[in-house]
Amino acid sequence: MRGGFGVFYDQINMNPFLDFRPHIAAAQGIQGNPVGAFPVSTYSRNAYNWQAVQAGGASIFPGVTPCGDPNCPGNPGLNIFSVSQNFRTPYFYNYNLQIEKSFGKATALQIGYVGSQGRKLNIASNINQNGVFPNFGSILQLNSIGTSNYNALQTIFRVRSWRGLTSQFAYTMGHGLDEISEYRAVILDDAFNLKRDYGNSDFDTRHLFTASFIYDLPRASRVSGWSSRIVNNWQLSSMWNFHTGQPTNEVRSGLYLIGDPYAGVSHKFSAAGGGTQWWNPAAFAAPCVLSATITGCPAGVGTSPYGNISRNKFYGPGFGDVDFSVIKNIPFNERIKLQLRAEMFNLLNRINLASGPGSVGSSCSPNGAAANPFQCTPSAGFGRVRDTIGDFNGAPGIGPGEAFNMQLAAKIIF
Image 1 (cartoon, rainbow, N blue to C red):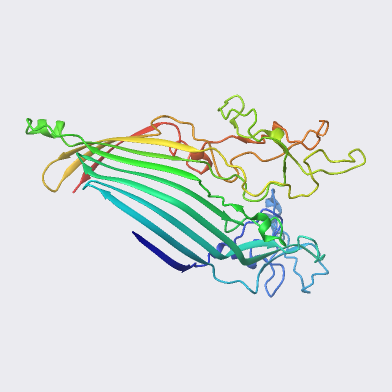
Image 2: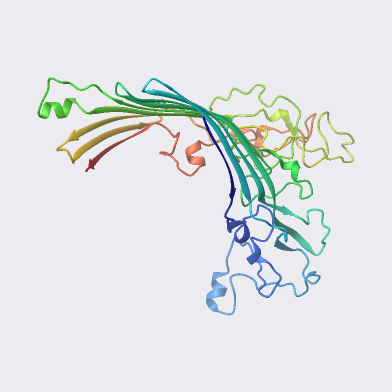
């Protein structure tokens, strides 16, 4: 039995300060503010006046629009980026307790609990969300008010060189919670209610199973010379990886749950449908907006822009992959050998769909003429997964979980 406990202070990443990449109209960082001794204006253009620039006397972008007065009365609507005066260094409590038992000389079982608590994590919020500073647009403020926690049961079973077999089986059941998982580009839904965004972490993976095998084939004792080099020194190797999907919404969706999100959904891939229908669109609805023609809200649909679905409530597709390798070692002498490898990835050719934030379509497009004019429809791809996990993560074709592929390799080991 063994355990451990530690407090670890994080090194603050500078990206949120200088390159935040907000998804709303906002300053990119403290260096992009329109106020101060060196004001900066941020512009977006989809066309450039190249001819005028080359002729001289013109600029690709308009000039800087500064705020001479801190209250910015002359140029209202400019966006500000700020850092809280109470910003502190993030820290973590990490702890674990492990129990290990050997069974003979070749096998061992390890069972353990692993936990972590994060405090003072950086989170950005729009403190002008309610428009109390009318001379400005958004005012992003970087704070150190975030929290996180992770708890997991981890088990490992090892086999060490038993009749040529070395293997490991591992299973983890874990759960991560926080307000915001990303360190930039995401802001709180409600700047005045931190816990409104408290929910499953973007990377939350409830169940994970992995296995690895290396098997040295028995040697033929009655061969010698080149026959021995051909017949002996073969290895078989395999790696397995299976896990459940990750949550799909970095922030609250702003929708209402009015039915079973998996009713009538088969989760079967359809090339004609452009992917896999993962959720039932009819189970979701946009917030109710009253008007002269709509005087009451449908059952289960409210008017709050935050909806009734917590952040990261629903999960995307799971992942499964089996890789297999055949390895041949040809020794030349005691120090040099040639290794030939045939490696097959995704041996079962399983379709591994994208998972994680943004993987499942969440654009709700209601039909205003329907009985429930706020109910989501599949017209905008709501609830549909359109990509594979390798391509979604920037490694199309040969990335993890992509279609079956094989590679041949030769190595000289000395």
